[in-house]
Length: 174
Image (tube, rainbow, N blue to C red):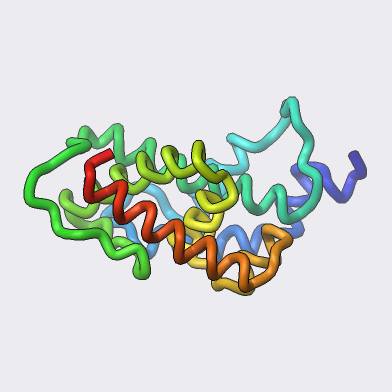
């Protein structure tokens, strides 16, 4: 692994982009959240820092891993708050707009979406990654396509299919 692909080097190269992704994710959190965007990036860094069994192939690989780590940190944080995972009478979840996680109801939605994404990942890992990057990281179609190394048309198709799959999965409750 070259020094430019070391986790320390990649963090330095991508810090501002990671901080922007963290701010995007934190914008949807409750206003009195105990983590800041900076703390979220640092927590993700701790999860990704050496020793690692698998090195990062490039900047895109590190960025995707960091965004996923930040998402997992927020999910872990939500779970420790003792939120119920299922509830009756929930409103449909709109995957086109990020959730406002300031309420208990939306926190449940967040956990339910994560469970559905985990099921989608077993069916199609790339589509699950598209959802993670578009919905949680707030990336555009073009940014997602560049990060995953596929065409924008592929991302648009994956996004449309994944939203329908997730909506059906969420309606069925798993």
